[in-house]
Structures are given as structure tokens and as C-alpha cells.
Image 1 (cartoon, rainbow, N blue to C red):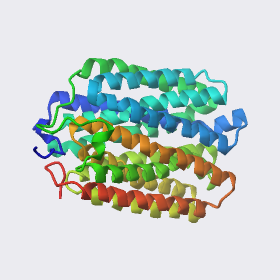
Image 2: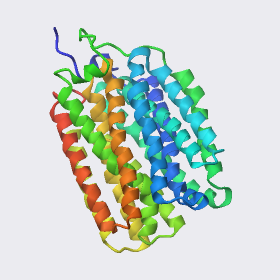
Image 3: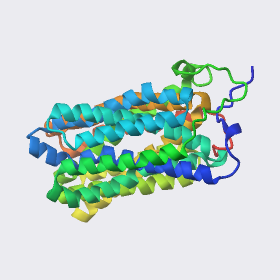
Image 4: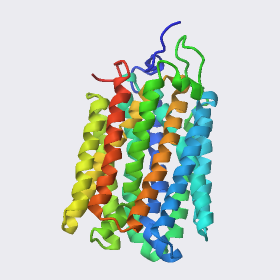
Length: 412
């Protein structure tokens, strides 16, 4: 039996085609919708707490609801893309996101909002896995890391404008209108995906064995990198979603006004976009197994600085920008690593289950942050606690690539 060609480059185009560029651009746009749907909650969270008279512990559960949905979507819906093709699953995910966001604009209770955030999360978790697989398979082999990385940049790119619009529109129109508008944007992407995506099934990897599904992630060739990838996503999302969920609130706690706290969140996401693009470009020449840990260690240092040093408004916002650039830019390098870790026959399953397992960390991160903030833990201690899982993420990311043989798509 021949060895499995783990990079699955045999079926990748040799050069960029118009269709490949259009598909990657569509995935970028869909990831922008993901960024709006997820991060808008962090920008409107202080207003929701005020309107509904709820504490940070209840708000933490609302943050975690979307992440629970992402786990369900990533683990149980996204793997269907390996059986039925990427198009059907992406369209289903967009429908879930659209319905959940539009209904959120009419929500009246915490329980209703929790259920709708789960629904939105199911769509996001599904589409994240399917898009990573689709972008990897559409791009030229040597540009795969660039393509998958750039798709991830859509999330923080949209979050920047979400924050700026939230700061301007929230005082006049309230948070219900913002949620309805976010849903309308997701609806607009559905016909584009319908027209552009193909019903073709994922290409099979030569004479590789037909073993697929979750069991296929634990074959001799894939077991070690699956475990390392799950660790990287778990610990990374534990930190990332703590920061994304609470950065406006943490900025206010650090001395900023509510509006400046929202702007700090927007600057964080601008840094995340620039960092993700920089990571994607550098990944063509540098091994992600070293690039990602380097950026994450730098993010830990920036977090400690943010929590420990008294700064001016401008310096606080600049540090939020730096955290976004290093933290989310570095973490988003995990997804090109994930796409390169699996052959096409289990790629959506592998990425989907990593998303699902990782969402356990993403649920714990905001929830634990809410508990620590409710207990009035000092900011230096709060950020110091989250540096530990950040270092664990860096180590696991190194191990994911250490377990792969170098390919044309992986620079040495």
C-alpha cells in the first residue's frame, strides 16, 4: 500500500486561476461575516449588561453559547463536507448564520439570546472548517499557506469595521438594530456562494486507503499531529476568545471610556488583520512551526504589559493593537498548519474536529475571565493566568509541523 500523500498537492492547480482567486475571495468574505457575527457581541456586551441588568458571569455564558454552537457545527456538520462536497455544507452554514442573526435582532430574553447564539455558532463552526479545506484545495500547492491564512484575515478585517460602526451606531440605534444589520450581510453572501461553488466532491488522494471520518484522524500517520493540533486550538482559543470577548471591558477597566473601549477593541482587530496578513505572507518562506510560536510568545509579553503598566489612552490603544497583531496573527497560523496536516479525504473532518475540540477552550476562556473579573482579580494577575495556555498553544503548534514531512507547500 502506498504512503498517504499528506499534503494532497497532486490535485492542486499549478498556478492561480480566475476561479481559484474567486473562491478564496468568497471564503474571505464569508469569514468577514463570521467576524461580524462573533465580535459584535463583545462590542455590544456592556450595553446588553446595562439594559438587562446582568453581571459578567451571565454575559460570559452568552459569549460561550456561540462557542458551543461552533463545536457542534465543527464536529458534526462540517465533516459532511468530506462526504457530500464543500458547496452543500457551506450553503447550509450560511443559512444557519443568517437565520440566527436576523432572529437575534428581535430577541427579548437571555434564554432566547443564548439559543440563537448557539444556532449562529453552529453555522460559523461549520463554515470555518469547510472554507479552510476549500481554500487549501483551490490554491496552488506552494501558495496553500498563503491562501488559508488570507481567508482567516477576513475575520479581524470585518471586526475592525464592526467596532467602528458599533461605536457610532450603538448610542443612537441600540444593539438590536446592529444584530439585524449583521444578519442582512450574511444573507447577501448566500447567492454568491450558490453561484460560485461547485458540487464536486473532494479529490481522493491517489491510492490512499478509504478510511475516513473521525477514525481516520487517528491512523498511524495522523495520530500525533491530530493530538497536537487539538491542543494548539484548545489552548489558543482559550486565550483568544477571552481577549476578543472582553477587550472593550478590559480597556474600560484599564481607564478608558466606553466609546474608547470600543475603539480599543477595533484597534485590536485591526492589529489582528495586519498580523494575519503578515503571517500569511511570511508563511510562504518561513516554517509555520517556528513562526506561530514566535508570534504567540510576543503576544504574551504584550498582554503582560497591557495588564501591568499604567498608560495613556493612546498607549493603551497601541498596546491593544500590538496584542491583536501578535496574538490573532500568530494563532491564525494554526489553520494553514491544520489544512496541511490532513489529506483531502479527511481535511474538513480534521479541521472541523479541531474547531470542535478547540471550542471547549473557547468556552472556558471567556467564562473563566468572567469569573475572575467578577472576583475583582487584578489585571496583572488576570493576564498572567492567560499567558500559561498561550505558551502551551505555541508548543503544540511547533509539534504539529514537527510531525509532518516537508512538502512544496511547507518551507523548511
